[in-house]
Image (cartoon, rainbow, N blue to C red; front, side, top):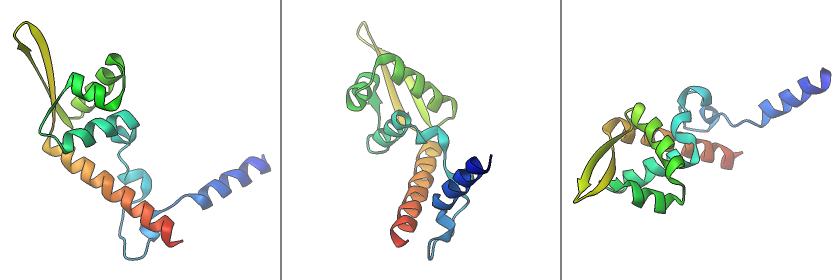
Length: 126
């Protein structure tokens, strides 16, 4: 019991709190880090859409080097959170799925990036 308590205290001591960085006023880590876009594939989707007006399902799949099922599940989660919009249409007889970033998605990504930058600054200053 005492050993696990000591390990927990050591882990807490190593955690970076961006609010302690000089000149940085930030919310606590748990409150400001968006866990939905923190996952690698979802962050990749949001980031790719931030620099492109829109991307097709196949373009995102190739860019992120993932499978149909994996991309579909992650894109659906982002769509449910209103971070991205999915438009389905046909190009001739072929189905075409296209994604674009919403205003909320762009603001969320900006907040996430600001938080990560604060963590990096805090880590480098120590």
